[in-house]
Amino acid sequence: MNTAEAVREGATVELTNVVKDYAGHRALTGVNLSMAPGEFIALLGPSGCGKTTVLRALSGLESISDGRITIDGRDVSYVPVNKRDIGMVFQAYSLFPHMTVMQNVEFGLQMRKVDATSRRARAAEALDMVGLGHLGARYAHQLSGGQQQRVALARALVTRPRVLLLDEPLSALDAKVRVQLRDEIRRIQTDLGITTLFVTHDQEEALAVADRVAVMREGNIEQVGTPEDLYTQPATSFVATFVGLSNPIDGRLVGESVRVLGTDLPLLGTGPADGDVTAFIRPEDIVFAERGIPATVVVSSFLGSLRRTQVRLEDGTLLFVQHDVRTRPLTGEQVHLELTGRPVAVSSRVG
Ligand code: ATP
Image (cartoon, rainbow, N blue to C red; front, side, top):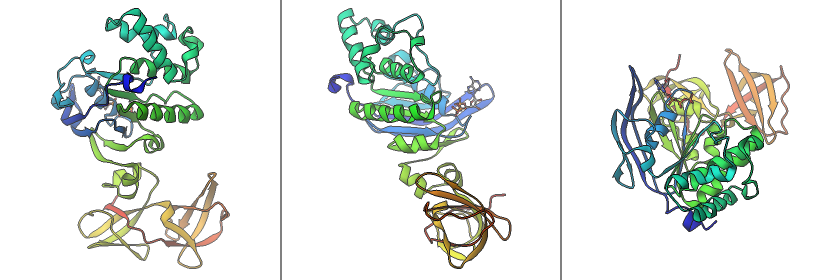
């Protein structure tokens, strides 16, 4: 497909203090998010935190109670869904069952009164882009789940929108197809330069595809950053535990340093007031050593390129240690641990 033709170029998108109230329940408490043209942002968070509500508010499917949404500087807060220049792909396969694949993709153009010849040509291009140029004559029930979602993507892109919204588009697919389609969505999105917001509750998926990840919690965005930023510099304990695996361990904060398991570690970012805290130690920041903190191996799991071993400290604390596959700890084995000394995120004492 001629990519210059496919979209006019991605838009800037700005959500400013967006609030959404559903009868008696505040689903969004003042969401702020800026998206650069062509940027791919994953909206990540636990069930019910408001991810879909952000997407629906941005698309215009849901009205907002307060705040402002702009696309390329134009206030679209009260602009109807069909006038926002947005393409959408949803979780559930949403193809029209009585139409062929080609007709499904053409549909949006038909609504926009594009003539039949251009319609056919553009739908064929969009189908080629998602690798389904040969299946235009099929019906939805004759396609696999992954193929249906590709058609849904072609249908969203055929109108050349400037913003693409994806609401858990991979969640109904099996693991392998999920990864394939995820990478393909990213490739197409990069080729087209279309500004994209991708909702998921799967952190691996978010970290793998996005330029930046916005972590949501209870109706608001807690941190926005590159995958590396979120992992190495979580702004809050929620982000530290939600993005990647962390071991919460009791510690004591004094100034810029936190004492954890007898070791002083530098503090990551800004911490709470001095005193008892919870430190979040990554499993790769704990190593087996000749001497150090005594522990007993609970179980060790082979994960392909690495091993994750759960150990129990003398006080009963359970920790995960991530290490080379060549080290094979046995259940019940007595080991010693050291902390690597990398900076650590802390929060006020949890629990
Ligand atoms: P999930 O990952 O489970 O899809 P989510 O993060 O997308 O969750 P939302 O669907 O945005 O969450 O819902 C946010 C909150 O708003 C939830 O508490 C939900 O129950 C509530 N909510 C969503 N839609 C409505 C509605 N139409 N009426 C009332 N409450 C709603």
